[in-house]
Length: 416
Image (tube, rainbow, N blue to C red; front, side, top):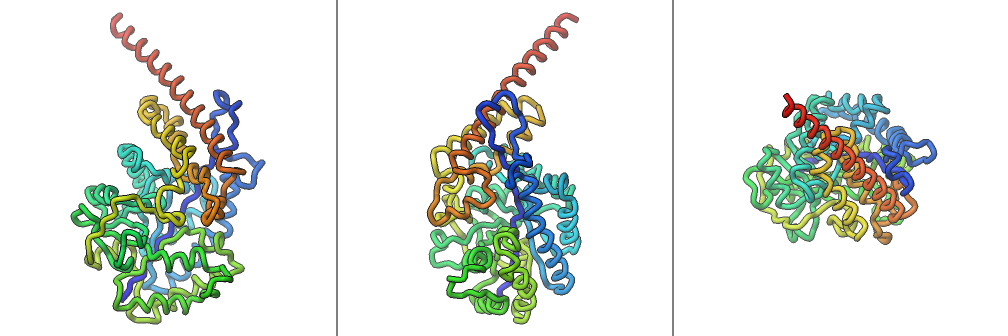
């Protein structure tokens, strides 16, 4: 039988405002909270909540009550949870109601939705710990499955997650490393002991997330019964169908007028019409199924763009220089012990900042422009680097102040 594993990423960044060179040294508020733009952080989250989060949560709560076999999973970025707590507690409460059903699993990730694993393991581990603390405080849950930012995955990450005791880790089921294998089986990452690898079935996932409203698609319109037949056809040739996607798929990327909520409402019943099908959370999949083979993924794979690598974030010179600049500040930032500086520095690590600097304006261009407040990748880079430069000046100023205070304390002790 194929089990169906539904997983949704829920994330909205705290975007950097149009920060000018003249602001450096004067304005320490870097983030886009001005009412002058429709793409400020609060307005974007208000729009997404109204179109996607609230109606989808309401529908899924109804479906969880109706179908006792329905189960699903989320990963929430810490920066998203902070914004919901501060500005949209009603939305956060609606997520809590879903978790309270006992059939919704929450996954572990980095608090700041960053790419820290590839730049600083120590910082990465700090952000994972902060995220786990936030999930426990908010939902009373201890994550057992790890999902890295944008499904960025490699053997090295799996080895780390295995040592940390996670039961499973998620990744894109990309053809280039799967070869003849199917993403519809559970695998063992190379170099690990007990952790399981769950791979996204990107073809079926993208049928919903990207192709659903595409009228030129040969399978349009996509109905729940048609999709359920595709899933059931895997019977005998797979353990699990992992449907991983952004939560904004429902109502934002795919609008209500195109029938996405009707599709979602009918999907569980259609899938469960086949008695061989069921729904499982990621940890349940890891517990139920044995690994069919070892999978070697030496290079980083993500779920982004046609290349499925890190080029969406670090594929050009301006992206590479920006991300290296911010991570090179780590030791000096932490030595300040200034929580506001540390928080601003970590918010500047959020992967979306570098995504907006991407210059790939071909097959993936429209995706990069979504929720993008900048007129060009270069505008994104300029605003970001101006803010990062101001942060560096703050760090240096605070470090000098700390050093002076230290000298005074030493002098006072010697004078006693």
